[in-house]
Image 1 (cartoon, rainbow, N blue to C red):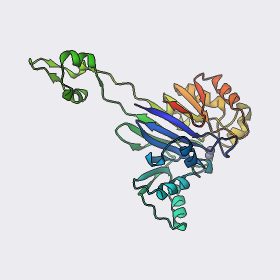
Image 2: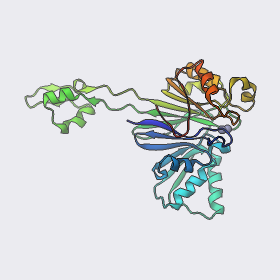
Image 3: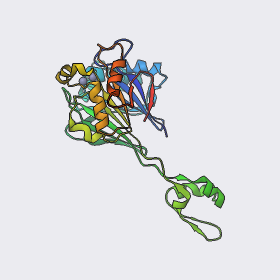
Image 4: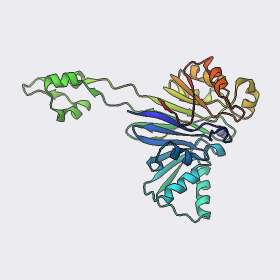
Length: 303
Ligand SMILES: [Zn+2]
Ligand SMILES: [Zn+2]
């Protein structure tokens, strides 16, 4: 099952050096989820061949412009191309007012149902689930209310042990039942336990998204042991004071967090405009956490 992240925007506050404000697309089993929607996100979607009509759920971390100023444009375009399917937006409570005021004054009546779900930054909560996936929000520590998001794959059904079922001549019609825990009775009356005809499914994977935040222990419990951790790394560690003042994280700290929470892999992004060359950020994080990668626009990262 596919579980991958496409980086659409990797810059912090301003677009620079061809980098765009924050946005990411998560593909879980060919269902697309958008996380943050900085200015120009819809242009980036077109650039990377993603049809926005495939996006049904949009998660906004906080109301700094570099994380949501592309949202109205994207929602407007969905309306203009005649979308009928509903859209769900999850974000801080004031987001609904912001969206409504735009459409009120442009006298736009959306052609599709739009549902805005308020998140809160007091505690973690599950905000979405379907048969494959569960999404939770959790509080980060930023200048304004801000949440991270955690995407957890659900435990899958066991897979059929084909070698065994074929050797026993189990008719294919029985296979979905065996996967769901039904034993198979052969024509000679022998009962074959479903456990003996199946293999353990792969362990469920998880992805956590942390942007923007100062480094504190408060949110670490929510991102423990994720397979892939995206963490902002706005500055190099020689700018630690500036990072603290602006409630951001350094590349070294992002690496330390990945170590602390026992993440398997780390993706860093939200780069300050002062860094044209990103290599020093990568190298700094790698001094403590080797499995670090730079979030590069247009690249897919598997969870
Ligand atoms: Zn930001
Ligand atoms: Zn911010």
